[in-house]
Length: 444
Image (cartoon, rainbow, N blue to C red; front, side):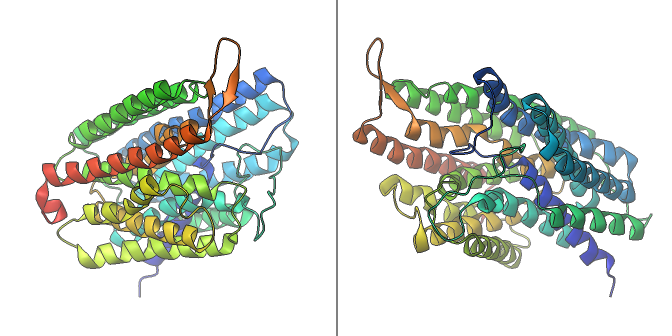
Protein backbone atom coordinates (compact mmCIF):
# COMPACT_ATOMS: atom_id res chain seq x y z
CA UNK A 1 0.00 0.00 0.00
CA UNK A 2 1.26 3.47 -0.95
CA UNK A 3 1.32 5.56 2.23
CA UNK A 4 1.80 8.84 0.37
CA UNK A 5 -1.91 9.29 -0.35
CA UNK A 6 -3.14 8.93 3.26
CA UNK A 7 -0.22 11.08 4.43
CA UNK A 8 -1.20 13.84 2.00
CA UNK A 9 -4.82 13.50 3.09
CA UNK A 10 -3.87 13.88 6.75
CA UNK A 11 -1.70 16.91 5.97
CA UNK A 12 -4.51 18.45 3.92
CA UNK A 13 -7.08 17.82 6.66
CA UNK A 14 -5.00 19.46 9.39
CA UNK A 15 -3.81 22.30 7.15
CA UNK A 16 -7.38 23.16 6.19
CA UNK A 17 -8.49 22.99 9.81
CA UNK A 18 -5.65 25.26 10.95
CA UNK A 19 -6.22 27.81 8.19
CA UNK A 20 -9.94 27.84 8.98
CA UNK A 21 -9.31 28.19 12.70
CA UNK A 22 -7.15 31.27 12.16
CA UNK A 23 -9.66 32.83 9.77
CA UNK A 24 -12.56 32.26 12.19
CA UNK A 25 -12.94 35.42 14.22
CA UNK A 26 -16.61 35.85 15.11
CA UNK A 27 -18.27 38.92 16.52
CA UNK A 28 -17.49 38.86 20.23
CA UNK A 29 -20.29 39.13 22.74
CA UNK A 30 -18.39 39.36 25.99
CA UNK A 31 -14.71 39.25 25.12
CA UNK A 32 -12.95 42.58 25.69
CA UNK A 33 -9.49 44.10 25.54
CA UNK A 34 -8.13 46.89 27.68
CA UNK A 35 -7.72 49.86 25.34
CA UNK A 36 -9.04 53.33 24.56
CA UNK A 37 -12.14 53.80 22.43
CA UNK A 38 -10.02 54.85 19.45
CA UNK A 39 -7.78 51.81 19.79
CA UNK A 40 -10.78 49.50 20.09
CA UNK A 41 -12.27 51.01 16.92
CA UNK A 42 -9.05 50.29 15.04
CA UNK A 43 -8.92 46.81 16.53
CA UNK A 44 -12.49 46.00 15.49
CA UNK A 45 -11.87 47.35 11.99
CA UNK A 46 -8.76 45.22 11.56
CA UNK A 47 -10.54 41.93 12.26
CA UNK A 48 -12.63 41.59 9.07
CA UNK A 49 -9.98 43.33 6.97
CA UNK A 50 -7.42 40.66 7.79
CA UNK A 51 -9.84 37.90 6.80
CA UNK A 52 -10.74 39.37 3.40
CA UNK A 53 -7.04 39.95 2.66
CA UNK A 54 -6.47 36.24 3.29
CA UNK A 55 -9.09 35.43 0.65
CA UNK A 56 -7.01 37.20 -1.99
CA UNK A 57 -3.69 35.85 -0.75
CA UNK A 58 -4.95 32.28 -1.00
CA UNK A 59 -5.51 32.71 -4.74
CA UNK A 60 -2.14 34.46 -5.08
CA UNK A 61 -0.42 31.53 -3.36
CA UNK A 62 -2.02 29.02 -5.72
CA UNK A 63 -0.99 31.12 -8.70
CA UNK A 64 2.64 31.18 -7.64
CA UNK A 65 2.76 27.49 -6.80
CA UNK A 66 1.10 26.51 -10.07
CA UNK A 67 3.86 28.34 -11.90
CA UNK A 68 6.51 26.47 -9.92
CA UNK A 69 4.78 23.13 -10.49
CA UNK A 70 6.29 21.54 -7.38
CA UNK A 71 4.19 19.69 -4.81
CA UNK A 72 7.24 19.53 -2.56
CA UNK A 73 7.50 23.33 -2.60
CA UNK A 74 3.79 23.57 -1.78
CA UNK A 75 4.18 21.40 1.31
CA UNK A 76 7.32 23.27 2.36
CA UNK A 77 5.37 26.53 2.15
CA UNK A 78 2.68 24.92 4.32
CA UNK A 79 5.31 23.91 6.87
CA UNK A 80 6.72 27.44 6.84
CA UNK A 81 3.25 28.84 7.50
CA UNK A 82 2.86 26.49 10.48
CA UNK A 83 6.18 27.77 11.86
CA UNK A 84 5.01 31.38 11.52
CA UNK A 85 1.77 30.59 13.34
CA UNK A 86 3.66 28.76 16.10
CA UNK A 87 5.84 31.85 16.51
CA UNK A 88 2.78 34.12 16.63
CA UNK A 89 1.22 31.94 19.28
CA UNK A 90 4.34 32.27 21.40
CA UNK A 91 4.53 36.05 20.96
CA UNK A 92 0.87 36.91 21.61
CA UNK A 93 0.97 36.62 25.45
CA UNK A 94 3.76 39.22 25.54
CA UNK A 95 2.14 41.64 23.09
CA UNK A 96 2.63 45.20 24.27
CA UNK A 97 -0.68 46.67 23.16
CA UNK A 98 -3.38 46.95 20.53
CA UNK A 99 -0.99 47.93 17.74
CA UNK A 100 1.02 44.76 18.31
CA UNK A 101 -2.13 42.63 18.37
CA UNK A 102 -3.32 44.20 15.12
CA UNK A 103 0.03 43.52 13.45
CA UNK A 104 -0.04 39.92 14.68
CA UNK A 105 -3.60 39.52 13.46
CA UNK A 106 -2.67 40.62 9.95
CA UNK A 107 0.40 38.39 9.99
CA UNK A 108 -1.69 35.41 11.08
CA UNK A 109 -4.51 35.88 8.58
CA UNK A 110 -2.06 36.45 5.73
CA UNK A 111 -0.23 33.27 6.75
CA UNK A 112 -3.53 31.37 6.89
CA UNK A 113 -4.31 32.53 3.35
CA UNK A 114 -0.95 31.25 2.13
CA UNK A 115 -1.40 28.00 4.07
CA UNK A 116 -4.77 27.34 2.47
CA UNK A 117 -3.38 28.16 -0.96
CA UNK A 118 -0.40 25.85 -0.40
CA UNK A 119 -2.64 22.97 0.70
CA UNK A 120 -4.94 23.40 -2.30
CA UNK A 121 -2.01 23.55 -4.71
CA UNK A 122 -0.46 20.44 -3.17
CA UNK A 123 -3.50 18.16 -3.30
CA UNK A 124 -5.90 19.46 -5.90
CA UNK A 125 -6.56 16.88 -8.57
CA UNK A 126 -6.21 13.93 -6.18
CA UNK A 127 -9.62 12.80 -4.97
CA UNK A 128 -9.04 11.63 -1.37
CA UNK A 129 -6.72 14.47 -0.25
CA UNK A 130 -8.94 17.17 -1.73
CA UNK A 131 -11.96 15.72 0.08
CA UNK A 132 -9.93 15.68 3.31
CA UNK A 133 -8.98 19.33 2.77
CA UNK A 134 -12.63 20.23 2.20
CA UNK A 135 -13.58 18.44 5.41
CA UNK A 136 -10.88 20.29 7.37
CA UNK A 137 -11.87 23.74 6.12
CA UNK A 138 -15.63 23.17 6.44
CA UNK A 139 -15.16 21.68 9.90
CA UNK A 140 -13.23 24.73 11.05
CA UNK A 141 -15.86 27.07 9.59
CA UNK A 142 -18.68 25.36 11.49
CA UNK A 143 -16.91 24.29 14.68
CA UNK A 144 -13.78 26.36 15.40
CA UNK A 145 -15.56 28.78 17.72
CA UNK A 146 -17.04 25.94 19.79
CA UNK A 147 -13.88 25.94 21.91
CA UNK A 148 -14.91 29.24 23.47
CA UNK A 149 -18.17 27.74 24.79
CA UNK A 150 -18.70 26.77 28.41
CA UNK A 151 -18.35 23.07 29.15
CA UNK A 152 -21.84 21.98 30.06
CA UNK A 153 -23.11 24.98 32.01
CA UNK A 154 -24.45 28.41 31.23
CA UNK A 155 -21.57 30.36 32.70
CA UNK A 156 -19.59 32.22 30.06
CA UNK A 157 -15.90 31.41 30.05
CA UNK A 158 -13.91 34.38 28.79
CA UNK A 159 -10.83 33.56 26.69
CA UNK A 160 -7.48 35.09 27.50
CA UNK A 161 -7.81 38.82 26.93
CA UNK A 162 -4.44 39.04 25.20
CA UNK A 163 -5.29 37.30 21.96
CA UNK A 164 -5.61 38.18 18.30
CA UNK A 165 -8.97 36.42 18.06
CA UNK A 166 -12.23 36.16 19.97
CA UNK A 167 -11.80 32.37 20.04
CA UNK A 168 -8.19 32.45 21.17
CA UNK A 169 -5.05 31.07 19.55
CA UNK A 170 -4.84 27.76 17.61
CA UNK A 171 -4.13 24.74 19.82
CA UNK A 172 -0.51 23.67 19.90
CA UNK A 173 -1.30 20.10 18.86
CA UNK A 174 -2.86 21.34 15.62
CA UNK A 175 0.08 23.65 14.87
CA UNK A 176 2.64 20.91 15.47
CA UNK A 177 0.54 18.40 13.55
CA UNK A 178 0.46 20.59 10.46
CA UNK A 179 4.20 21.21 10.69
CA UNK A 180 5.09 17.52 11.01
CA UNK A 181 2.67 16.28 8.37
CA UNK A 182 3.61 18.99 5.87
CA UNK A 183 7.32 18.27 6.25
CA UNK A 184 6.70 14.54 5.92
CA UNK A 185 4.59 15.10 2.80
CA UNK A 186 7.33 17.26 1.30
CA UNK A 187 9.96 14.59 1.99
CA UNK A 188 8.03 11.77 0.31
CA UNK A 189 6.59 13.84 -2.55
CA UNK A 190 7.39 12.38 -5.96
CA UNK A 191 8.96 14.75 -8.45
CA UNK A 192 6.87 13.34 -11.32
CA UNK A 193 3.61 14.29 -9.56
CA UNK A 194 3.38 18.00 -10.31
CA UNK A 195 1.07 20.76 -9.14
CA UNK A 196 -1.85 21.36 -11.48
CA UNK A 197 -0.81 23.49 -14.44
CA UNK A 198 -2.23 27.03 -14.43
CA UNK A 199 -4.93 28.06 -16.88
CA UNK A 200 -4.32 31.74 -17.41
CA UNK A 201 -7.91 32.88 -17.95
CA UNK A 202 -9.27 30.89 -14.99
CA UNK A 203 -6.47 32.11 -12.73
CA UNK A 204 -6.99 35.74 -13.67
CA UNK A 205 -10.75 35.48 -13.24
CA UNK A 206 -10.33 33.89 -9.82
CA UNK A 207 -7.94 36.62 -8.71
CA UNK A 208 -10.19 39.45 -9.92
CA UNK A 209 -13.19 37.70 -8.39
CA UNK A 210 -11.42 37.30 -5.06
CA UNK A 211 -10.58 41.01 -5.01
CA UNK A 212 -14.14 41.99 -5.92
CA UNK A 213 -15.84 39.73 -3.38
CA UNK A 214 -13.37 40.71 -0.66
CA UNK A 215 -13.97 44.43 -1.19
CA UNK A 216 -17.74 44.08 -1.49
CA UNK A 217 -18.00 42.01 1.68
CA UNK A 218 -15.76 44.38 3.60
CA UNK A 219 -17.52 47.58 2.49
CA UNK A 220 -21.10 46.32 2.59
CA UNK A 221 -20.54 44.45 5.84
CA UNK A 222 -19.22 47.64 7.43
CA UNK A 223 -22.20 49.57 6.03
CA UNK A 224 -24.61 47.19 7.74
CA UNK A 225 -22.58 47.36 10.96
CA UNK A 226 -22.93 51.14 10.93
CA UNK A 227 -26.72 50.79 11.05
CA UNK A 228 -26.74 49.44 14.59
CA UNK A 229 -28.60 52.55 15.73
CA UNK A 230 -30.68 52.85 12.57
CA UNK A 231 -34.42 52.86 12.01
CA UNK A 232 -35.70 49.31 11.31
CA UNK A 233 -36.92 49.92 7.78
CA UNK A 234 -33.63 51.56 6.82
CA UNK A 235 -31.63 48.72 8.31
CA UNK A 236 -33.49 46.07 6.36
CA UNK A 237 -33.39 48.01 3.10
CA UNK A 238 -29.60 48.22 3.42
CA UNK A 239 -29.41 44.52 4.32
CA UNK A 240 -31.55 43.58 1.32
CA UNK A 241 -29.49 45.71 -1.05
CA UNK A 242 -26.21 44.34 0.30
CA UNK A 243 -27.35 40.72 0.02
CA UNK A 244 -28.57 41.30 -3.52
CA UNK A 245 -25.22 42.80 -4.55
CA UNK A 246 -23.21 39.95 -3.01
CA UNK A 247 -25.38 37.22 -4.50
CA UNK A 248 -25.42 38.88 -7.93
CA UNK A 249 -21.64 39.35 -7.90
CA UNK A 250 -21.09 35.73 -6.88
CA UNK A 251 -23.47 34.48 -9.55
CA UNK A 252 -21.79 36.60 -12.21
CA UNK A 253 -18.36 35.35 -11.17
CA UNK A 254 -19.50 31.71 -10.97
CA UNK A 255 -20.64 31.74 -14.55
CA UNK A 256 -17.38 33.21 -15.79
CA UNK A 257 -15.72 29.87 -15.10
CA UNK A 258 -15.81 27.04 -17.66
CA UNK A 259 -18.11 24.04 -17.37
CA UNK A 260 -19.67 23.53 -13.96
CA UNK A 261 -16.68 24.71 -11.93
CA UNK A 262 -18.47 27.89 -10.94
CA UNK A 263 -21.14 25.89 -9.16
CA UNK A 264 -18.70 25.45 -6.30
CA UNK A 265 -18.95 29.18 -5.53
CA UNK A 266 -22.74 29.00 -5.57
CA UNK A 267 -22.71 25.94 -3.32
CA UNK A 268 -20.34 27.67 -0.89
CA UNK A 269 -22.50 30.79 -0.86
CA UNK A 270 -25.66 28.80 -0.20
CA UNK A 271 -24.29 26.71 2.65
CA UNK A 272 -22.69 29.79 4.23
CA UNK A 273 -26.05 31.55 4.24
CA UNK A 274 -27.69 28.48 5.76
CA UNK A 275 -25.01 28.09 8.42
CA UNK A 276 -24.73 31.63 9.79
CA UNK A 277 -27.89 31.34 11.87
CA UNK A 278 -26.60 28.19 13.55
CA UNK A 279 -23.17 29.73 14.06
CA UNK A 280 -24.72 32.76 15.73
CA UNK A 281 -26.42 30.47 18.25
CA UNK A 282 -23.28 28.38 18.77
CA UNK A 283 -21.32 31.49 19.70
CA UNK A 284 -23.65 32.75 22.42
CA UNK A 285 -22.93 32.37 26.15
CA UNK A 286 -26.27 30.69 26.83
CA UNK A 287 -25.40 27.40 25.09
CA UNK A 288 -25.31 24.53 27.58
CA UNK A 289 -24.53 21.67 25.19
CA UNK A 290 -21.04 20.29 25.93
CA UNK A 291 -18.45 21.31 23.37
CA UNK A 292 -17.48 17.66 22.85
CA UNK A 293 -21.03 16.83 21.73
CA UNK A 294 -21.10 19.76 19.30
CA UNK A 295 -17.73 18.78 17.84
CA UNK A 296 -18.73 15.14 17.47
CA UNK A 297 -22.09 15.84 15.83
CA UNK A 298 -20.72 18.51 13.51
CA UNK A 299 -17.75 16.43 12.37
CA UNK A 300 -19.77 13.25 11.81
CA UNK A 301 -22.46 15.18 9.90
CA UNK A 302 -19.90 16.82 7.63
CA UNK A 303 -18.08 13.57 6.95
CA UNK A 304 -21.36 11.76 6.30
CA UNK A 305 -22.50 14.46 3.88
CA UNK A 306 -19.25 14.21 1.95
CA UNK A 307 -19.37 10.40 1.89
CA UNK A 308 -22.97 10.33 0.64
CA UNK A 309 -22.22 12.89 -2.08
CA UNK A 310 -19.30 10.82 -3.31
CA UNK A 311 -21.47 7.72 -3.32
CA UNK A 312 -24.56 9.27 -4.91
CA UNK A 313 -23.13 11.59 -7.53
CA UNK A 314 -19.71 10.50 -8.75
CA UNK A 315 -20.59 11.54 -12.31
CA UNK A 316 -23.70 13.71 -12.18
CA UNK A 317 -23.18 16.54 -9.73
CA UNK A 318 -26.09 17.31 -7.41
CA UNK A 319 -25.02 20.15 -5.07
CA UNK A 320 -28.63 21.32 -5.00
CA UNK A 321 -29.53 18.32 -2.87
CA UNK A 322 -27.08 19.41 -0.19
CA UNK A 323 -28.23 23.02 -0.46
CA UNK A 324 -31.82 21.88 -0.04
CA UNK A 325 -30.95 19.98 3.15
CA UNK A 326 -28.98 22.89 4.59
CA UNK A 327 -31.79 25.25 3.60
CA UNK A 328 -34.09 23.55 6.09
CA UNK A 329 -32.31 25.52 8.81
CA UNK A 330 -33.25 29.03 7.58
CA UNK A 331 -36.67 27.69 6.55
CA UNK A 332 -37.41 26.68 10.14
CA UNK A 333 -35.85 29.92 11.41
CA UNK A 334 -38.23 31.93 9.23
CA UNK A 335 -41.27 30.35 10.85
CA UNK A 336 -39.84 29.62 14.30
CA UNK A 337 -36.78 31.79 15.05
CA UNK A 338 -36.23 30.48 18.58
CA UNK A 339 -36.22 26.81 17.62
CA UNK A 340 -32.97 25.01 18.39
CA UNK A 341 -31.13 27.69 20.33
CA UNK A 342 -29.81 25.06 22.72
CA UNK A 343 -30.03 21.43 23.73
CA UNK A 344 -30.88 18.50 21.48
CA UNK A 345 -32.58 20.79 18.96
CA UNK A 346 -29.33 22.73 18.49
CA UNK A 347 -27.51 19.46 17.81
CA UNK A 348 -30.18 18.57 15.23
CA UNK A 349 -29.80 21.93 13.48
CA UNK A 350 -26.01 21.52 13.48
CA UNK A 351 -26.32 18.01 12.04
CA UNK A 352 -28.66 19.19 9.29
CA UNK A 353 -26.50 22.10 8.23
CA UNK A 354 -23.34 20.00 8.54
CA UNK A 355 -24.72 17.18 6.41
CA UNK A 356 -26.00 19.61 3.80
CA UNK A 357 -22.70 21.49 3.74
CA UNK A 358 -20.64 18.35 3.30
CA UNK A 359 -22.89 17.03 0.53
CA UNK A 360 -23.09 20.34 -1.38
CA UNK A 361 -19.36 21.03 -1.29
CA UNK A 362 -18.30 17.48 -2.21
CA UNK A 363 -20.84 17.34 -5.05
CA UNK A 364 -19.61 20.65 -6.47
CA UNK A 365 -15.85 20.32 -6.10
CA UNK A 366 -14.22 22.14 -9.02
CA UNK A 367 -11.45 20.81 -11.21
CA UNK A 368 -9.42 24.00 -10.98
CA UNK A 369 -7.27 24.83 -7.94
CA UNK A 370 -7.79 28.65 -8.10
CA UNK A 371 -11.56 28.19 -7.99
CA UNK A 372 -11.16 25.73 -5.13
CA UNK A 373 -9.12 28.05 -2.91
CA UNK A 374 -11.45 30.96 -3.66
CA UNK A 375 -14.47 28.88 -2.67
CA UNK A 376 -12.90 27.37 0.43
CA UNK A 377 -11.85 30.79 1.76
CA UNK A 378 -15.11 32.54 0.90
CA UNK A 379 -17.22 31.46 3.93
CA UNK A 380 -14.78 33.15 6.33
CA UNK A 381 -14.93 36.40 4.33
CA UNK A 382 -18.75 36.43 3.97
CA UNK A 383 -19.09 39.44 6.23
CA UNK A 384 -22.39 40.56 4.71
CA UNK A 385 -24.16 37.35 5.76
CA UNK A 386 -22.82 37.66 9.29
CA UNK A 387 -23.81 41.31 9.60
CA UNK A 388 -27.24 40.70 8.05
CA UNK A 389 -28.11 38.08 10.67
CA UNK A 390 -26.68 39.79 13.74
CA UNK A 391 -26.98 43.58 13.44
CA UNK A 392 -30.76 43.83 12.83
CA UNK A 393 -31.44 41.46 15.74
CA UNK A 394 -29.15 43.22 18.22
CA UNK A 395 -29.54 46.87 17.28
CA UNK A 396 -31.41 49.65 19.10
CA UNK A 397 -33.85 51.89 17.27
CA UNK A 398 -33.88 55.67 16.97
CA UNK A 399 -36.52 57.27 19.15
CA UNK A 400 -36.32 61.00 18.75
CA UNK A 401 -33.81 63.77 18.43
CA UNK A 402 -31.71 62.92 21.44
CA UNK A 403 -32.76 59.48 22.64
CA UNK A 404 -32.13 55.93 21.52
CA UNK A 405 -34.16 53.17 23.09
CA UNK A 406 -33.75 49.41 23.00
CA UNK A 407 -35.61 47.59 20.25
CA UNK A 408 -39.18 46.71 21.11
CA UNK A 409 -40.08 43.03 21.48
CA UNK A 410 -42.19 43.27 18.33
CA UNK A 411 -39.35 44.69 16.22
CA UNK A 412 -36.92 42.12 17.58
CA UNK A 413 -39.23 39.23 16.71
CA UNK A 414 -39.81 40.66 13.24
CA UNK A 415 -36.06 40.91 12.69
CA UNK A 416 -35.60 37.30 13.79
CA UNK A 417 -38.13 36.14 11.20
CA UNK A 418 -36.66 38.37 8.50
CA UNK A 419 -33.12 37.13 9.15
CA UNK A 420 -34.23 33.56 8.49
CA UNK A 421 -36.20 34.59 5.42
CA UNK A 422 -33.26 36.53 3.98
CA UNK A 423 -30.90 33.57 4.30
CA UNK A 424 -33.55 31.21 2.90
CA UNK A 425 -33.84 33.41 -0.20
CA UNK A 426 -30.08 33.30 -0.69
CA UNK A 427 -30.07 29.50 -0.50
CA UNK A 428 -33.05 29.27 -2.86
CA UNK A 429 -31.35 31.52 -5.40
CA UNK A 430 -28.18 29.42 -5.31
CA UNK A 431 -30.21 26.24 -5.94
CA UNK A 432 -32.06 27.93 -8.80
CA UNK A 433 -28.89 29.27 -10.38
CA UNK A 434 -27.17 25.89 -10.29
CA UNK A 435 -30.11 24.16 -11.94
CA UNK A 436 -30.96 26.90 -14.43
CA UNK A 437 -27.46 27.34 -15.82
CA UNK A 438 -26.50 23.66 -15.96
CA UNK A 439 -29.50 21.38 -15.23
CA UNK A 440 -27.52 18.14 -15.62
CA UNK A 441 -25.27 19.21 -12.79
CA UNK A 442 -28.10 18.76 -10.34
CA UNK A 443 -30.14 16.00 -11.75
CA UNK A 444 -32.54 18.35 -13.49
